[in-house]
Image (cartoon, rainbow, N blue to C red):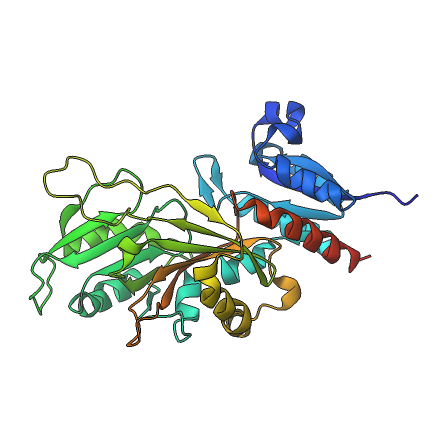
Length: 350
């Protein structure tokens, strides 16, 4: 009997977790079970920069690697991990999501690269602090904007910005702005334009940049998350994403996000969105980004906000972001397709 294929499930942890934690004790237990059902042996691979060489040697002994690590966390960024994964992939081990694909799909710049698609809007890209300082005033005179740093998660580096005086047509360094950070627990502030520029300076470090979109007025209707296994929707999430809502008058605390609810891929009212994404938008995105079918991550998601309704009352959707690095949790309906797609990709490499 042939040996079973081995797939490492990579997640952050310390030395004690690496030495003692069993996969069934982790949040990825159901994924391991699903892989086992298709003849794959799941192997926990706890990662930390402090023992990266050890993880590298472990991954070289795998047939495939699936990764669940955020781009930024209190434990660090992914720079060491991504270099490691590129080396492992270069030795013939299948890696999802590959760091090069994350750079194409999983940063906020995807919003700018696909701005001319039907899911796009008036999206602008600032590659330097000087460009940001000189070009943002013109955008702000058109209404509230949402600024997003190039890479981030958890709402960090995402700001709603608008003029205190909505009628102002000339912006100086002293112009007052209402600014709300999307990070949980943040309160709305009044900053000068110069204050905002100073606060955003750190986002231009290295390859950093800022993406700028108009604030979507239907934000109160919630966000739809489409969970995809390769090129097919395997489930939906829905959440009232109110991190950018103004604090209600008289309240001492900002509105907190509502719970995320999960749904199977057959949810009736989202079938038009499913059809658009699977049959048109996905192929166009791949063409614009240079991402082939075999490059699509095994599991990823695309977040949509509701855009203006059409003249006939139909919903439109605006892409908010794409998540590739650490898609979890997701609907249970995605487990079987995820395992089957992993097996299919490994079989194609034997």
